[in-house]
Length: 391
Image (cartoon, rainbow, N blue to C red; front, side, top):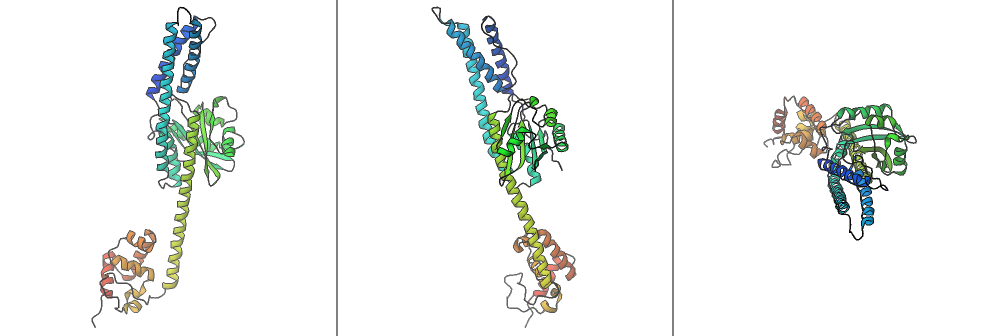
């Protein structure tokens, strides 16, 4: 069964401030390139940049050229004012972009703590598989994929694609029909064998990746991390920043690794909860069977505790051996006593340490054996039968 999540959750992937910075970078690099055209010994390419990291890289190239040009122009006439002004502009813009990246990472670190707290809130395994891609969207990734690992085969179970739920469904469908294989795809093999996160550049030209998924998603760069539970890799996480003003980088790879560690702990918690619930159900069935074995064929000869604490405990109850309540098992008598005291099914379940379903079964049996139409009538009969007889 596949669990899909789409565009209704997660934060917008576009960063308008980053888009402005990219435009400013292109304008600045173009100005540097125009200056370099007048220098026969220099070339500064002026091409579009689509990520903040690419912008920083291009600005560094321009800065190196301007520094060299400024050093060469020094002399009696002093530094070239045009070159100096452009150098200040490049340095200032690079600083602004670096600060923007630092602020984004600080915000993401805070969001990471909130995401992991939500995943540790007692979710079941199916709920975790639905929630994990959404949380990765909250961390700023525009697309994410959650896969399980069985033996040497990995296949997607859930996905998130911002503003494209159909692509999320297609990724899971294609990945399930054509699962990946450890030993064939290099990045995933490294994740499983080394148990650490990876960063993949230029995926379109990488022959050792999951070609069908990469082609379908038109993925350029992506990060991946293993999910480890009790020392065993049980799943894989993949993310990218498609159509965003920034590409995944080493910081994103490390962030994903930390998130994957938290997911592993959440999986451990969910599995413990499932096992505990299964053991509790098994214990309840065993207790019910023991009750029926020892008390189902005859009455309970010991008197029940009075529903009202003010009643006299020394009163004898001959009805327990031959009266209407003699048909009840010990557990049914306990349930009836609490019921007569005004307890709800949940109250009774808590007191007897059983499930509400077990209590409902006992209540139905009590009503049938007493010939009572409802809980109120059963309580009234209990009080009437347990009322102390005059000497």
